[in-house]
Structure formats: C-alpha cells, structure tokens
Image (cartoon, rainbow, N blue to C red; front, side, top):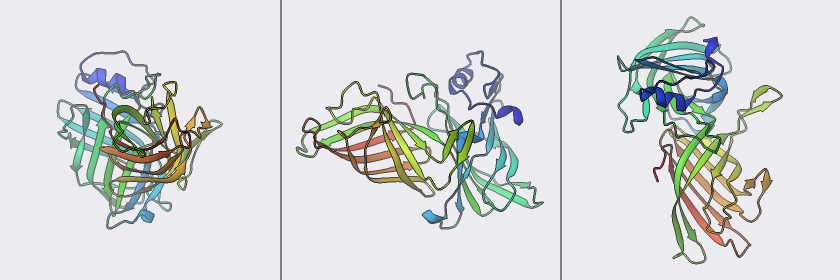
Length: 323
C-alpha cells in the first residue's frame, strides 16, 4: 500500500467517475476507477482515531491516536465494498494492526451521493501478536458530492466516517476537517421580535490535534480543541459584506459514542489572523453527530451599538444546501 499514501483523494474526480463521465486524473491522485469499481485512499494525516471501551464509556475513557491509512474499494458489479486498514493504533502498548475486510455489502442510503456499509460483521483476522481479532458493527459513510469545496479555491474536502468494534474496543475514524452546510436563526436580544433567519453558510470544523511544522507532522492527543471557520458569515445583520471568512478558534470538545460536544464560555473571532473585538462570542455550545448534523448556538453581545446583542442558532448537515 505504499503507493496510496500520497494525497487525500479527489472527490470531484470521484463524482465524475461514478456518474459515468470519463475524466483524466493525475497519477498522484488517490483515485482509480474502471467500469465497475472505484478505489479511494486516505492518508494517515487525513484522520485521527478515537477509541473507548464498548461498554458504558465515559468522556474520560476516550483516547485519541494519529490516523491509520485506509483504502476503500467500491465494486458496483457485485455491490460490495472492501476496506483495507494499515497501521491502526488503538492503545500505547501493542503493535499497530493491519487488516483487510472484503465482500462487505454496500448499504442503501437515503442520499444517492453516499456510499458505504451499514453495521456489518463480524470478521476475524490474525494480528502480529498471533491473536485472533474480531471486527464487527462496521459502518462506513462516504459522501461523494463534488460540490463539497469550502472556499473559492474549489478544493473538495473529503467527507467520510468509519466506525467499528475491534474486540472489546469501539473505534471511530474521523477526518481532521469537516464541512457542514447550515442555516441560521438570529434573534435580537433587545427586541426578540426582530428575527433574521434562513441565512445559508458553510462551516469548516478543524480538529487541532495535528500540527505541521518544518515538513513534519506532530500529533498532540491532549489538544482537544476545534476551530470553526464560517464562509461568507452573516449571522448578524450588521456584519460587513467584506468579511469573507471568520474563525472561532480553540473551542474545547469532549467525545461520546455519537460524536462531539463543543463548549466555550467566551472567545473572540479571528479575521485574517487578527482577533475581532466587535463580535465577541459567549456561551457557545454545539453538538456534532457523526455523519449527520451539527447544531450550534452562541450569543454575540457587542458593546458596539451598530452590532447589538444577538442569539444565534445554526442547524447544519454535511449535505449541500440547494438554494
């Protein structure tokens, strides 16, 4: 599998391939296809791994590890999927595991842009420790919409989620960057009848455990924070149109079996790397449910009379909103 660890796969190419349009993809792309199969690959630097005991885990039980390498092969003739895993780490004491799961039935999803596997298994394999390991409850969610780019560069951000039980441990594989498409409802706290609603925006959630410095990646499992970047923000009517992106930095998160909880009592948004004091954010909370939704709420209580005080609620999903 050395050949596949070169780039995160291209979703624009993939969508064209699935639709039957033959496109010329660069040889370095982690995408291969013929008339019957599509092969996707994901770099170890593209995701992290969260693990906890299967039975009744608390928030403190969740451990984070740097990502493994993955190869997903969708066969449309047999309607099956294969998942190859390289160097999966689930604790600090044992050798990382590599294994391949084959002939997984592709799931029937509500959205035609989703390919995956839904709660399948068990599969057994022998590890480097000469033990037989059991994989079950396999869930793969892979969203192939070519419109899933965040900014004007039109760079598609891959959206996927993989989970399974490995022996007595539940494993969640999560990308470092996730895009959500949402609508906002903003209520003026000085005049609650003044409600601004249905403003569409894109939200990029970036997990901060992975850093890249001087050509090297470093992973810090204790830096459990995310940045939320909003494209074309307009969650308050007085926000200038010239603001194209705004970031809420360093929001702490906790994990559970379904996803993440984000909470911050106060923060200053960042615009072009500079804190922006006109829009102070307080009482921020969010629930991210794996593969399904992000619900975000916060207050903006500004001393600037032109801004005012607002409560903002966001309902968002990984799926593109058709305006």
